[in-house]
Length: 193
Image (cartoon, rainbow, N blue to C red; front, side, top):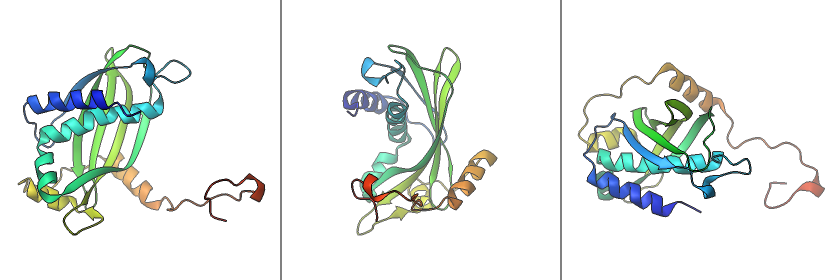
């Protein structure tokens, strides 16, 4: 189940917090509750992705993007990510999340988030985020339109080489994925024949 009450609490705190610039970090503190655990009694890797919402969406609110989204009838969605898990987070453990936008290219905004506990980085995520929707429009909105709507006239800061390498790698990944041959007796659901 989505952590809606934690999400609303984070949004309420973000509304009261001072605005941040487009590249400033948003810092938030969270706790690993028993319902966030996997069978090994640590923060579930899938739940980690959900908990990153609790930092990313309030960050966007503090940046002032929600006003532009509302005016233009835009939204934003994760279009890809890469996560590194390095340290376990156990039940009831408090942790700090750091979220920031890194820059953009012709299609996506790039963000990074990390979770810290005891001075150590527990995990880190790189995301590319698409701006979607609009009045009478479907598909991806070029980030240049969002940046212009925010009054930013400077180009994106150069994305780090490791982000550019990831982007190039993702552009070579086949879509849709090529399915292996599956014996007819093992097929279930709506897989293509």
